[in-house]
Every structure is written in structure tokens, then in C-alpha cells.
Image 1 (cartoon, rainbow, N blue to C red):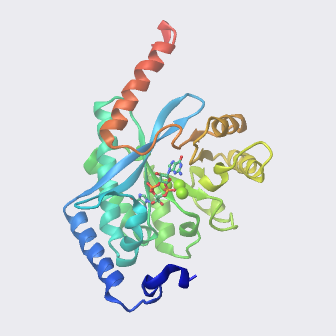
Image 2 (image 1 turned 90 degrees about the vertical axis):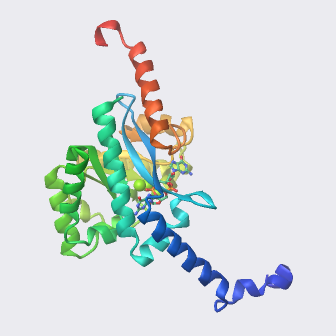
Image 3 (image 1 turned 90 degrees about the horizontal axis):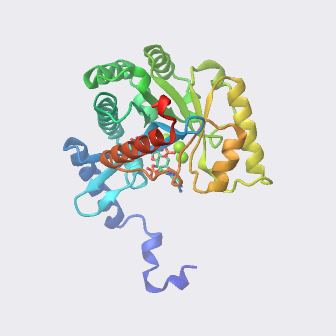
Length: 290
Ligand code: C2E
Ligand code: MG
Ligand code: MG
Ligand code: MG
């Protein structure tokens, strides 16, 4: 394998050369600066509520407007943020931007919309996190039920009282909690007993190859049944094809998210999408219902 790479193969084997480490340090410094200067931008991806055919919530996804490399997705910088602790100021910035945007949609239209923000476990370990969220909501003038926090299974299995206390306090404030990438983390479902979870987001891995006969379809069917019997909402992520949507609709999945509905887009683009959908759905209703 190394031979086939010819004269450059040393690049792939040396770890003590200055190149990659220096690149990383540079990226870390750039990221720190980007957070301080608020060069991070939040994109929004809608979730479609199937029963009403309405977009009632969106997920906030961090993007970095890098000065020379263009708009970077989280895969390019979240791991650095996690390793350096920068994920705390980054997460705070995303939360504030998302809440302020949701407040605009609520107060200036076109329609109230819940915003879901991805969490890092480091945020949940901060003893004052729930209080900070309350402050951010108050500053943004956003009611708590219009904020949702997306957690992963590993966060819910942490044996840390700070995490548990934060989640309890957040739920008491009215903030919604959901489990992201559901089904990929741990086989323990015990946390569903202990935490006030509002919805499960089925991981994209189960949606990719959905067809009537696959094992994935059995898994999805079982997740929907379990969630509904526990009074939880079910969201499917990564929906790209009409056939996947049809299957999920048939199974009673509550909301879907994916490129089939829309890619993550800047706030103004989502506002236009909402205006457009609203105008069209009104036209579909009988005059008395408008
Ligand atoms: P996630 O929370 O599971 O978000 C879903 C990811 O799937 C997003 O990638 C989204 O753009 C992508 N996606 C949505 N629909 C489709 C589809 O139909 N097909 C395919 N192939 N992909 C789809 P993105 O924006 O690159 O984010 C990746 C991950 O980064 C997120 O996964 C989340 O774990 C993390 N992340 C994003 N923003 C934040 C943040 O503000 N804070 C933290 N801590 N993590 C974040
Ligand atoms: Mg998410
Ligand atoms: Mg997800
Ligand atoms: Mg995912």
C-alpha cells in the first residue's frame, strides 16, 4: 500500500513533522478568533410535521464562514472545539443566535417556529447551564417551549449529577429535550425512564436503506411503536427520497427532516421558504378556514 503511494508515502506515516500539528494549531487559533468575532453562522434545516403538512420546527446547524476556506461544516471544526473547550463559547453563540432568530420568527413572522440546538456534553456539565439558557431566552424574548435541545444517548448515560440537574431544570422551564441520532449510541434505553424526553430523532443510518423488506424498516417500525407508547414524538432525519417519506408517513412518524424537504439554509432563505409555504397552503384551504 505504501509503495503504491510512491515518494510521498512518508507523509502518511510520520506524526512528528511540524505540518499537521501546525495546521491544527492555526485552525484552533482561527476558530477562537471566529467565535470572538462571531464569524460563526447558523443555518436552519426545517422539520416537516406530517399530520399538518406544516414546518413547525427547524434545527440550527453551525457553519463557520472561514476567511479563506469558504463556509465550513461542523465536521471540519467541532472536534477541535470539543478538544479545546471552545465548544462552550461556540455553543453559547449558536444558542443565542438561534433563540434570537426564533424570536424574530415569532414576533415578526411569517410563523412561530421551534428551534432545535445541538448540545455538547461539556455544556450540560456546566453547573450554571440551565440558568444560562433561561437568561438567553429572556434576552431573546423567546418562550421556553420554542427551544429544543438535541442530546445524544451518551450524554443521557453520563453518571453526572450536573447533567441530570440541568436537564431536569431545563424541562421544568419548559425547554423541550430530544434524543439525536437515536439508535446508534448505546443499547441501554434506561435513560428514557429517567429523563423528561420529548422526542426521538431516528438516525440517518436507519433511513438510508429504508424499503419494505430491509431490516432497517423493521427497526424504524419498532422505534415508532415504542416512542408512541411512551408518548414521545418521532422524527426521522436524512430523508432524501419520496419512497422513504411514504414509508415513514405510513408508519406514523411525526416529523421528517432531510434534503427531500430542504437542505440547511441561512435564516433569510428559510423565512422565504416559510412565507412561500404559508401562502400556498392558505390557497389550498377552503375559504372559511383561512
Ligand atoms: P446532526 O445533529 O445529526 O445533524 C444532521 C446532519 O445531517 C447535518 O449535518 C445535516 O446537514 C445533515 N443532513 C440533513 N439532512 C440530510 C440528508 O437528507 N442527507 C444527508 N446525507 N445529510 C443530511 P451538519 O450540519 O454537517 O452537522 C453535522 C453534525 O455536527 C450534527 O449532526 C451535529 O452533531 C453537529 N453540530 C452541528 N451544529 C452543532 C452545534 O451548534 N453544536 C454542536 N455541539 N454540534 C453541532
Ligand atoms: Mg441534531
Ligand atoms: Mg441528528
Ligand atoms: Mg446525525
